[in-house]
Image 1 (cartoon, helix red, strand yellow):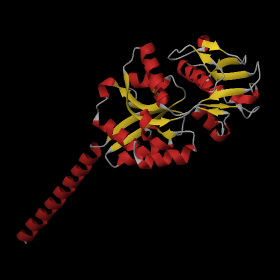
Image 2 (spheres, helix red, strand yellow; image 1 turned 90 degrees about the vertical axis):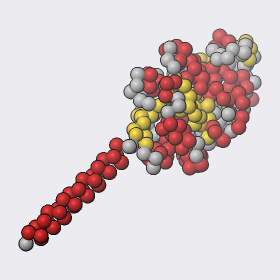
Image 3 (cartoon, helix red, strand yellow; image 1 turned 30 degrees about the horizontal axis):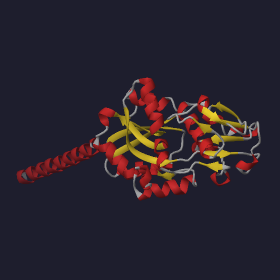
Image 4 (tube, helix red, strand yellow; image 1 turned 180 degrees about the vertical axis):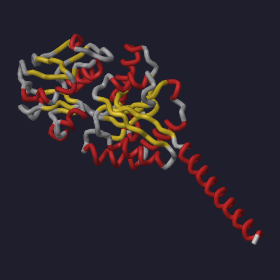
Amino acid sequence: MLKNRIKGIFLIFITTLSLFILAGCGSNQSSKEITVRVGITGDNDPALKKVAQIVKKEGINLKIVEFSDYSQPNTALAQGEIDMNDFQTFTFQSDWNKKHKTNIVSIGTTVIAPMSLFSKKITSLNQLKKGDKIAIPNDVTNEGRALQLLESAGLIKLNGAKIPNLRDITENKRGLKISSLDAGQTAKSLDDVTAACVNSGVASDAKLNPKNAVYREKITAKSKPYVNILSTNAKDKNNKNYQKIVKAYHSKEVADVIKKSFHGYESPAWNYKILQ
């Protein structure tokens, strides 16, 4: 009888110990998962959502944090509210660092999204007449990009400034009336102007078909400043988990999502050797 009681106590002890060990293993497993907060603008980033699925298998919980405009993700990054962001180009980042005295760096490219000249009134550049109104974005980097787009289309000439503004136009033979407004309003302005330079994200939201653009930015080596990037604070640029996120982004699975989801608005930048 005593032996049976001892055996029973021993079995209870072994069972309890086993449960404790299993619970401990489960606790250790969950504690190994790392959360990385990545800021974006807007509310839909299918490519990053695919990245989140890929890195989940490596114990990284990628949390996407949405912001409403371009001024917020870098501020949040510099203040430590997020760990990375995915919304800007090399040029935007450089300009932001200079103006705000931040030390934000790129750790990997994402997409190249050509800017386009759209119109509801004309279908070719030859149809532009003297005095026609052209709208362009008013933030520094996109304004410069739009002016370079108009120059490459043969509509104006610039003085060679790295990031040009309206004062850098040296020739405008067609007498086009170029005015700047908020980037998000360029597509909406098409009812009031002859044509507008529209960023791909804005064009996509407005359901503007890139195939119907009057003129589209060509992807060349000169496009590199406008490649979109994953960014973090300089002190974290060698973070192994962040590098895993970059590696996941540069995968065929994500490239396929970009091609399927953006219908030509955006392309995987890492697939262009001229942009490396």
